[in-house]
Picture 1: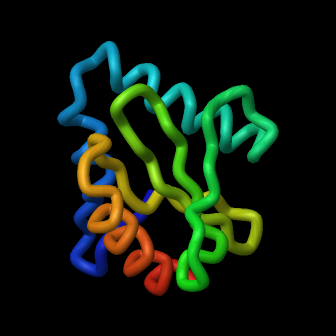
Picture 2: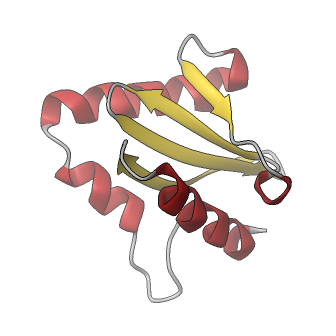
Length: 100
């Protein structure tokens, strides 16, 4: 999972704030994608746009988990409730630059 230079783990904090029943579903979907990639039996969508190459979202109900794979490692970059997708994608895109 993404970690800031100061050692904070915003994605983990987001997951911790989700009600337990939804957290189990979200983390289960993330685990399936980690194991099976885009072939996992969950909703995975590539984020379109020239600046979003390699950025994907896992859709679990009203929650979104953004991830990026580099060097065979799956980086969970950002988690959010489905709301303002453009702002949430921008946060994930900024974090890609830090894990490349």
